[in-house]
Length: 337
Image (cartoon, rainbow, N blue to C red):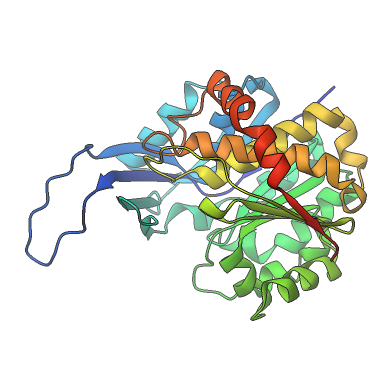
């Protein structure tokens, strides 16, 4: 029995230009080979769509966010309505978040973000849903959420008091330091970020020291995604390092969100509603390995098409696992903290 998932965070209109040969020089015209795509982005939307495409019941998903009273907000709301999960989207006077994503072949993505409506997500609505629905998992993507970021520690504390598993993802903070997140680490069951973000969050120079600091502050399970280098998972049982799946990358945008959806799916598949009572710091490495392998497969699959969710396909994810999973498990490494 799964009581549900609450997804909180920013929504964004993604304007994606994939498979560019180069970035235009000043005054230069470059024709784009694979078109320009408008799609719904933002961590909670991507995760909701990925979960549904993988067979999760949309009626068990609630999403809280905010968009502007503009055409981009209309596009986001109308697109998400098609997936039939519960939307609690505030329409605010600020412009909808937008992101121009330029993807040059063989290079990481270039993001150009306008932050607007996400600064105005209502805290009261989040607390109301936590109290009334008591979901199995609260997933929240932080960094550009305004007052929600400022109240993150209190929101997570209340979720933990209600017996809800807390899963926090990050983006580079807007007009603030990482202090709001550091003070909340002891209320986080699962934290996901990449290696550069973790270094910034902890203000450490070495990744190992950054990992130690996060665990010392009370976070139970840490996932670090490394792009084409694979991923790491760390809890008190040790450090697990897996190589990446090998796929033809069209656009890596949304891979981290797909990874998080894989973590959520596998946790619920393995533990059901009991996920709320797990001590994730003590989960054996073998179980963490299974979770991360599945999450990596979703992340790799997301890279195989333009935009954040277009490539997610349940059959192809399991095909990828069947073809490459055993080899990745053979090459994975485990070490003590």
